[in-house]
Amino acid sequence: MSGKEAANGQRPWVTWFGDDFTGSAAVMEVLAFAGLPSVLFTDIPGDRLAARFGNCRGIGIASTARSHGPDWMAENLPAPLAWLHGLGAPILHYKICSTFDSSPDTGSIGRAIEIGLGIRPARAVPLLTAAPLMRRYQAFGHLFAGGPDGVSRLDRHPVMAHHPVTPMTESDLLRHLSAQTSLPGGLIDLEALASDPQARLSDLLRDGTRILSLDCIDPASEAAAGELIWRNRADLGFVAGSQGVEYALVRHWQQSGLLPPPAEIGSAGRVDRIVAVSGSVSPVTARQLDWAGRNGFALLGFDAATVCGPAEILEAEENRLVEAASNAAGHGESPLVHSARGYDGPEIARYREALAESGMDATTANRRIGEALGRILDRVLRATGIRRAVISGGDTSGHGMRQLGLAALVAKAPTIPGAALCTAHGDNPHDGLEIALKGGQMGSEDYFGWIRDGGGPR
Image (tube, rainbow, N blue to C red):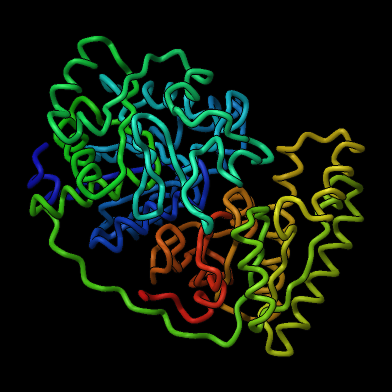
């Protein structure tokens, strides 16, 4: 399939399956704001819903795979991957977090690649995790991530090194991945990208390499990675990586003339109140909560320890917060329900103590937190009539979104890369809701206020 055929035909250019909701929405954002109409479904759509978005050139499905084990993946990944594969896009992308959240037991990227190759055969799978616009960099196989205090190697990152489910003890991604799959990997590093990446690719393919880790630190290496993937899409049609895959492809498409420069997208306009929920333990989110508390938001703490106890205790906590949030909204404030303010606060100690006493596994407890926050958000939106919302936290966004009964998202207004304001579609009262899904480590200090203001470029 030539570039012009991709551009002029009716098939999508890219399809993707995301292992969490925030990252899945971020892919849609990259494509949509580059001028490619795109949609993110929350499950395999029915024929009528799919036809409603038949003009889209980017089509994705979001999941919560990042918080599940290999057996769950084997049962739940083939059907949506097969549906996306059937759309005929040149690139089928398995979307992962830009901080490579994964382990052999939780969110295994290696197992996902194995399953994907059973759906979309490929000589090798490019693995492009870095996204320089998001301050994610890969140099000579090692991943780095930026934060408020600078750029850190992933195994020394203040959040990822202490992640409660998938702490990163290794920044060499192929080495980290080797615990998840026996597929042989090889590196296309910065020197190869700057000289002759095609020759390096040929050598790796000749040697039987199945996973191709791609460095990326700046526009030049990003464009080179995008060109390599697109030029070799007949052999490399199944790709794993963050939204850095789409950033690289878009940069190549624009430089090659396949895509014209995009029109600037403006703000969605300010509203007086929004509703937000947060399940993130990131210090970035903690700073955002502090800012929100000083700027018109009512901070309401959710006792996460209640998910480890009897159902009636959790229900009472949800009822308490729905009432408190509705009252705050009635007084002109924006309610913001949160389960933590950083990863080392007293509420975390209480939660961990309750978790240990209950014998519940952490994956189940984290899912229950996200679901509870989603139910609270659902009820507060219905009670107040507020039509703009935020869910903060990667896993929280997936579990929380399920409680809203929404079927599709379309990007509406940009904020920081990867956390756009979207319009949601569904067969319920939340149809047309404006909602942003934000990863815990993402966003400016005033992010919640920025969404209240309608997003838009700065």
